[in-house]
Every structure is written in C-alpha cells, then in structure tokens.
Image 1 (cartoon, rainbow, N blue to C red):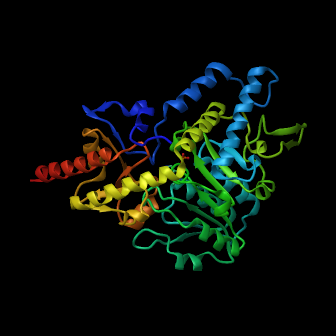
Image 2 (cartoon, rainbow, N blue to C red):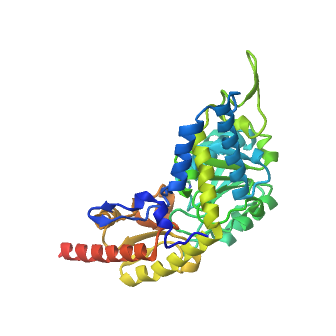
Image 3 (tube, protein in one colour):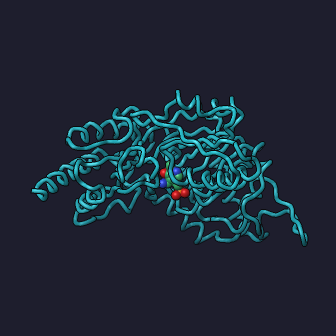
Length: 411
Ligand code: PMP
C-alpha cells in the first residue's frame, strides 16, 4: 500500500510556491490534481497508440480500441456495475444528468409527475430537471434539510410518494460535506415506483462506491475530481432502463445501419456514444482508477476522515468561523464550507491565496442552497488524500492571520 506521507511526491504540481509560500491546494471539490502515473498514461497513449476507436482494422486502432474498452471494464469494477454495457463514457457529471433528463425524461415523464431533488443539489442536478419540468408539465419538488444539513428523512417520506417519478440526489454535498443515505432513499423511491438517480461527483473520488448495493438506477460522476483528466466522465445505468432509452446525440460510432430516412443504433453502451469520444481521457481515467485502487478507496476515505477530525476542531477554536453542514467530524467529509464573521468570502479566499492556500469562494454552483442557508456565498476548503495535517495547519494559520488582518484593517 502507498504511504500517505509520501504520496504527494506523485503530484508534481504541488511542489511550487504561490505568492512566495509553498502551495497548499485545498480546492479538490472543484478539481483534483493528477499524479505522474496518470500523466504517463496520457503521454503513452498519444506517443504510441493514438488512433480512432472502433473503426480501423490497423494495429494502432486496435490498440486504442482495446485500451478504451479496458478502461470501461476498470470503471465497471470500480463502481461494481453488473456489466460494461451499463457504463457509458460522458464528458462529466453534468453531461450524464442532462442525458438522463433528455432521454429518460422525455420518454417517460408526463404532466403531473413529480421529480424530487433536494436543497443541497449542485446546479447540474437542478437545471436539467427544471427544464424537463417546463417541457413536460412535471412538478419539481425539493427535500428540505435539517438544521445540521442532513436530508430530513421524515419529510422525505412524505414528499416521495406515488406521484414521484424521479428522485435525483447528490451522494455527497459539494458544500455541506454530508454523505446522504442513498440506499434508504432508493428504497423509498422504488417503493413508490420511482427511479433513483445519484449525482456521484463528490462521492466517487473519496469512498468505495457500489451501484448495485445502493440500488441506484443511474449514477453519474466526473473523472477530473478523481485524479483523471477533464472532459471525461461516466454515466452508469441499469441495462433494463438503458435499453428502453433513446440516445441523446446522433452521428458516427453509435449506429448500426444508416438508411436515407431512418437509422438503427448499435447495442449498449455504444448507442449513447456518438462521435469520436474522449479516447485519451477514458484511458487516463482507467489509469486514475488503477492509481486509486492501489491506495484503496477505504483507506482514502479513512485518511480523509482523520484529516477532517484533525482540522474541524481547530477551525471551531479560531472563533468567528461558521462552518456549514454537520459540526461533528464523524458526519462531515473533507468538503468544508465556512465563513469568517464580517469578512466577505471572496476577501477570505484572496487573503488565503496570499498565504499560498488555495480555497474557493462563491456560491459553489448551489445558489438554492445558499438561499436556504441565508448566505450569499461561502469560502470552501476541500481536502484530498494528498493533503496532510501540515496543510490543515497552514489553513488554520492563514485563517487566523486573515481574521487578525481584517480586525486591524477595520480599526
Ligand atoms: N455535482 C456535484 C455535487 C459537483 O460537485 C459537481 C462539480 N462541482 C458537479 C455535479 C458537476 O460536475 P462537472 O462540472 O464535472 O460536470
């Protein structure tokens, strides 16, 4: 197993100074850094195998196709899908969720049906459903949250009912850091004959995902948040559902026969993958999965929880720091949204950047949640397995310094 103390040596980007301070990268919920091993896979593909997939009979095309499909198998095993036919390559979580609203939504959702999401969703798990509701006459409903930031299960049991057709929820919130009880909510959805869609963008990089154990009907995630490149993601779907669905995009690669006025599609999963896919991205995502597997997803989760248990009490101890979501480390993942009393989060993020600490500030593509929390924005520090307790200390010191600076500045 890899040693967390030396793991950062795999990430060349971390060894640089920002504003004359060693970089502490804590914006992992936005995107993660790439280890040398993944960069090597990308480079190797372009240097030795680059060719289009599924078309050519020449050796390079066969190698590229074999590696592209090998990656699909790696993804299948990583999320425990039943078969590779259920693993569709996309551009990312956003594309996966949009495909579902278009393909499943347009085929099966009718006026009066209810689509249930929650107040903690990312815009990419809100807007496709708003659009579907506007097109179809369906009704969009929101699950409320408890004061601690959990989905209110008592309310969920009322809101998810026989009118519900789709329940679509984040596995892990990109703001509150909570892990939602997807299995329980999937059971609730299924007992009302609704389907369960999971936005796995913030979960898949950080913990073991088992789509069959969750009984998710669909599950979307992004490669770039789990050490892979940008522009590649995955949509998992149960075969029985994918088979009933039409592709969203049409063109090369996805067809069986094209006649003048009608065409037929390839079998799963290719019927959904129109055009030249992100071949290098898919292969490098396979490389990222190999890398994460070598560390072990359970080890990653445990290590990150140790970091959270280390840093949360220190943040609370600063004073004047509001942390959103659960206050106890046990229920909080490495995504920590916070505000400093009287200081705008953009100023906090700018001040932290001056100390070399990279965090994000803004609405985090979750404006309904910001309204729900009654804030316009927050700062957000988000950890990954290559962060250390020393990084956590630097964050705490930089927040303390920011607080002092603005206190003096205000005088
Ligand atoms: N859902 C959640 C919970 C996210 O955190 C993100 C990325 N910030 C997305 C969806 C969208 O992912 P992408 O931009 O990679 O499509």
